[in-house]
Length: 102
Image (cartoon, rainbow, N blue to C red; front, side):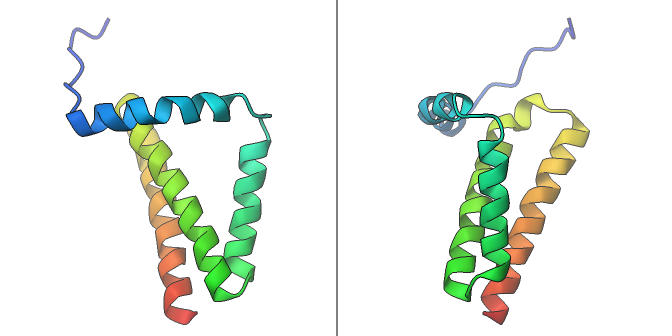
C-alpha cells in the first residue's frame, strides 16, 4: 500500500465518470482492433480529405483522445500522462493546421 489517500474527485469528474460508464462498457465489448483501426482511418481522412471533412474527422479524434486522457489521468504514471498530453497536443496542432490552411 502506498499510504496516501486518493485525492477527492470533483463533482464534474464524478459526473463525467458516471456518464462515461455505459459508453466505456460498450467500447470494451467491441473487437480489440476496431478502435485503433477506426482511429487510423479517421486520421487518414483528417489528413487527406477536403478541409471540411478532414477537420471534422480530426475533431472527433481530438474529443475521443481528450476524453480518454481525462478519464485515465488520475491512475496513470507520469510517463503515461506525458504521452496522453503529447497525443492531445499533436492532434490539436494538426487540427489547427488544417483549419488555418483549409
